[in-house]
Image 1 (cartoon, rainbow, N blue to C red):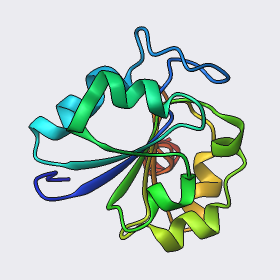
Image 2 (spheres, rainbow, N blue to C red):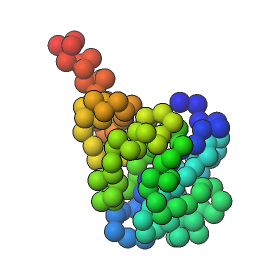
Image 3 (cartoon, rainbow, N blue to C red):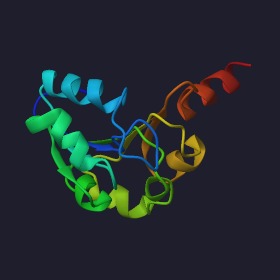
Image 4 (tube, one colour):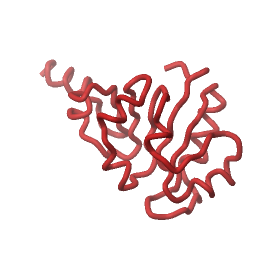
Amino acid sequence: MILKGKTISVLGLAFKPNTNDMRSAPALDIIPMLRELGAFVKAYDPIAYVEAERELGPQAIFGNDLYETVKDTDACLILTEWDDVQKMDKDQIKQLLRSPIVIDGRNLFDPAEMKERGFIYQSIGRPSVWEAELVSKAQ
């Protein structure tokens, strides 16, 4: 995906759930990289959004509502496994996204289920559903 001019929603800013601690949080590196590639960033964290805004400044629009953050974005990036992210209404998320693209940095969801729901879904450290299908067909 070419990121210039695209808007990316980032869900989870703290380095782990249930804290506002931003030390060593992946968001501190990833959001500036997205900006360097020309993307706009909308960022959500239920607790750490104030601390994240202090750390990252104007590099993102920060909010405390998951669904408002995802609304009208081109892709969704999950960085922290907050309960509300794990329990989010996937059908509503799909409707809010301009494109149903989810990059899951925490492996929260089942790739086959996400594909079945119509998402373009990639988790980190495990093959995509499409790669798994190619491997099984080749065997």
